[in-house]
Image (cartoon, rainbow, N blue to C red; front, side, top):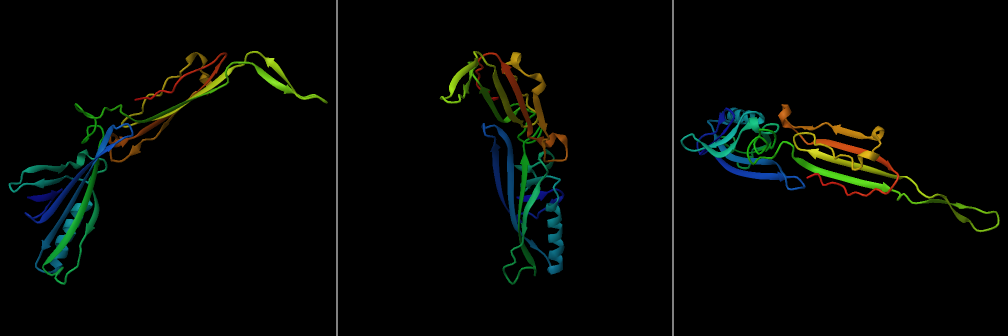
Length: 253
């Protein structure tokens, strides 16, 4: 078995290999992506320190790139299941650690130990673990959704407390019926596209001039628009009615 990173190929049986896959879920248990982590440790051999330095520089340069693939090959050169296709990740394959534990007197004579960690994230339209196929996350997937309804007043009478010069204040009704006001506010995050805002609960009482819908720029984690994620949208409606208003906020999912 041996490892290949981009155009760089490790020597046969040179590197130890560890693989970890961590799925990522939204608050509603929607699978929104996967993080792949691979750890490689091994030993470079060379004729002297200069030869080892040259070989390590080549190794380091290969893992410094974010483009290209990462794959574990069997002894016949066939790809195994342990593969990260760099073109189907968010932001490419990143090297998070490159370390040489120079702990013995013989290091950098004819051998050099190294340890490397890489990480890649997936989950996007036509990407690994993303939308585009049967059973994958739909492109209109909602990551979060919150909405609130606030009602002020009941439509009942309005009164004032009239103050007297010498006596106690007196309650006086000035109108038998009063308007009811309400607000409907919410925010939602779509994984790959802007979600559709909740419709006004009482369209006949909606103050159209006060209606607001706000779209916030998405998170851009890659080099193309397919890797844009988390499209945030908020809405606000105001209502004015002659009678009571009652409603429960929508869940959105």
